[in-house]
Length: 161
Image 1 (cartoon, rainbow, N blue to C red):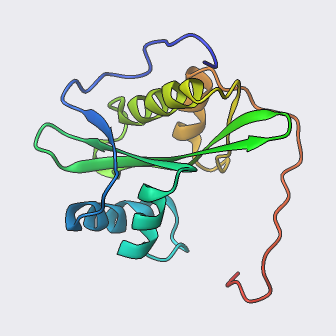
Image 2 (cartoon, rainbow, N blue to C red; image 1 turned 60 degrees about the vertical axis):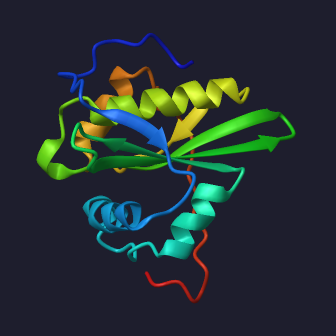
């Protein structure tokens, strides 16, 4: 999709990446544990939030489970059509801090790239804060290229800053 698949990190062969299509307490508990590891300012997701993501035709919620079935990472793939063609965007990639560096993030991204390609997307975009050094190295290893572009954000006046 975006480049050759290289050996990204020591591979954890006990990891299975699956799509969440219905929400259960294990998924909610896992995301409530993982999201604060990604963003200290994001509120904990509710069952309604995750249900909307899991059932929307525009989003794919992927989770990585270890060999015990515990969710240890997640990623959201956004698929949409623009006048210039199908597009894909990766959001909220997070792996539990206790087991980072074992290829789980790479497994999640690979699955997202496969699904984006199957949906017809010729490119996949994502953003990552510069402070997330390991994540940025991962994305480069996976074939992502940093773009010379401006990213703009509009904040609703009622949004917490």
